[in-house]
Length: 72
Image (cartoon, rainbow, N blue to C red; front, side):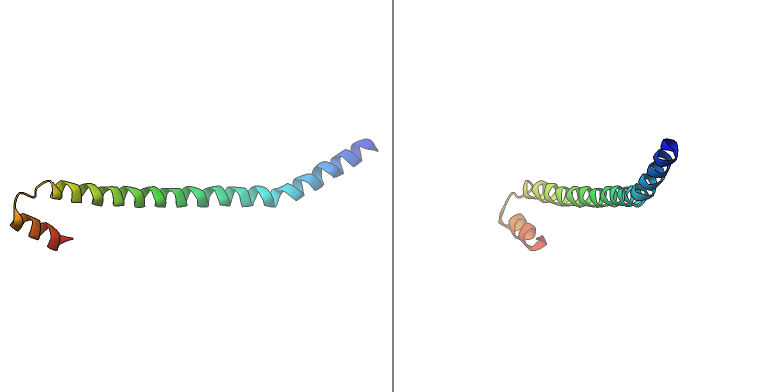
């Protein structure tokens, strides 16, 4: 009798948590993709900023300053 009750409880618990497990797996996969996208965006912005700083170090006179400013 108790074994039947425990088996029924185990089955109900499995049925209850199965959708949550699927949702959690999808959520984690989505978060991985979102994190990868954000890291790529940060990397792109950093590369642009570093490139601009390198170009700024090449300013030697008014003409190079004008060229640098027009490229912005």
